[in-house]
Amino acid sequence: MRKKLVVGNWKMHGSRASNAALLSGLREAGPWNADVAVCVPFPYITETALALTGQAMSFGAQDCSAHEQGAYTGEVSAAMLADVGCRYVIVGHSERRAFHHESDQLVADKAKAALAHGVTPIVCVGETRAEREAGQTEAVVKRQLAAVIHTLTHCIGEIVLAYEPVWAIGTGLTASPEEAQAVHAVLRMQLHAATQKSDAMRILYGGSVKPDNAVSLFGQPDIDGGLIGGAALKAADFSAICRAAG
Ligand code: PGA
Image (cartoon, rainbow, N blue to C red; front, side, top):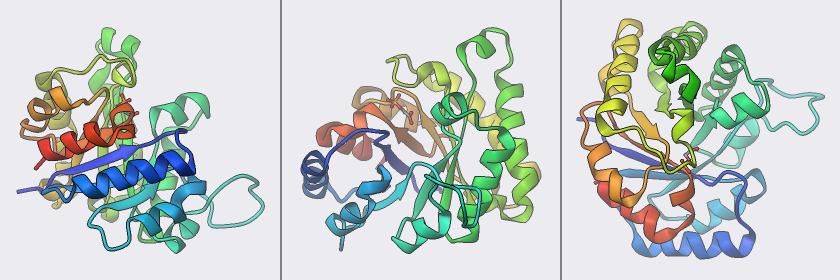
């Protein structure tokens, strides 16, 4: 039985004051039966670490460089994330693929850099609305995952995968539990062909997960938790989603 994982993706939101309030709300609401983490903007990682000292909740970042170190102005390495205690890093979020033109291979290289430093990459895959309407959903997510499988080879079992249909992110539109499950099953099969660990790997669903749809999504056999954007910014909503995963 896979333990569920719920990850809050704060994106570019927050301030020291609002983060402190949110984390204190989560401290009061937890612990939960599921594993829970928050992926916060870089400047707030250390304060988040302090606020979560002694808590079961873990924390991480929303991106990392594929490079080890060097003259890469503005980049943050996986080694740095490990150094400040990050457990997770999101890589290949659709907003980075779209706005920063991240390729499948770059995303795979970032995942590899994270694993090399003991930080678990949460690798995001997902199709756009146009791709879904053109019947390309499976082909797109399989292509995105294939790059990661090819690059990580025997380490692929160490990642967390997140299926996030781009059309469902921040739109209030959610894939139905059945639609999401169908894609998760495809991804699990692809992992199965690549690693004996596929049954133990967690595949999260992301895209407008809210307290009122979390139970039905998390009830699907291959949905092992969620990557939560908007609803992760409110302690009451995020904790309700964590409870739904428990
Ligand atoms: P959303 O974002 O929950 O606001 O749709 C999810 C994500 O982008 O990870």
